[in-house]
Image 1 (cartoon, rainbow, N blue to C red):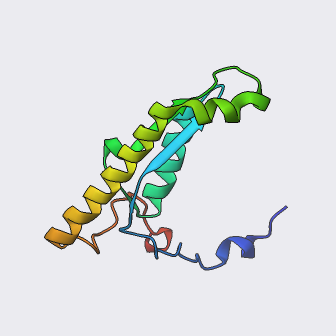
Image 2: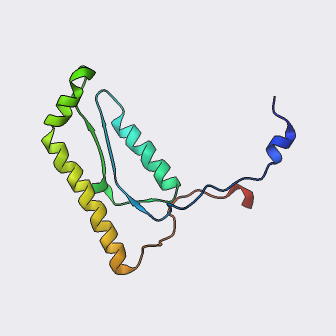
Image 3: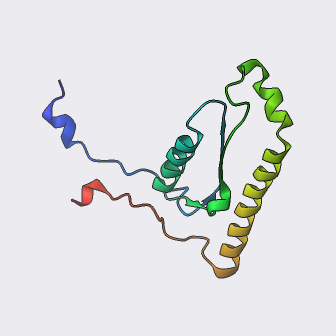
Length: 120
């Protein structure tokens, strides 16, 4: 059972040292939920105030779908198309950063919808 005073502690705000930084995300899996994992990580990074470099910078793929784990690394090595897709994610990040450098949005505001609970 929690005591009432436990709920009265001041809320420490999450550090925003990564807010405004651009990110790309690549998720690979062999069975299920790569899209769900990508969205969960993306939501978390967005919540921290980071900014996705666009839809081209968010990738989820299945590799060696339902194949044994022991051979999955070989299957990953054979996925040359995935390497090009990963390079495209890197290009999207590079392009987003260079656009921000040109137009001065390096320290852009967080785009997350997170609000400070202590403001209530």
